[in-house]
Image (cartoon, rainbow, N blue to C red; front, side, top):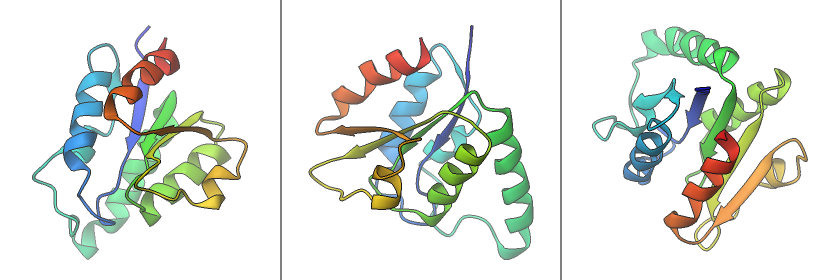
Length: 137
């Protein structure tokens, strides 16, 4: 059965991992539905979304979160929006899996200390995909 995945990654917090997001999203899409494939769009800039679009962005993203079966987040680049999405998912009982590059990132204690979240540190990108397979099986 195809799962609906909400993929979370930084947009306004920085786009240095956008290519990684794109590869993860493409991997997930081989067998499942990614509701937020735009996160991996390499043309998106960190200034994406004009002020008059912010309400629409919030409403669309929160609707996608409620529709999702699972949240998969790549949190190596800190993002207030991603943090909000993770808390929103927890409040709505949606399973959350957080990936981060351990040598590069010191994950927030608000994430690592919350037992609700499934935390998956990695050193090499290749370590991500078998875990995603396990999550989505």
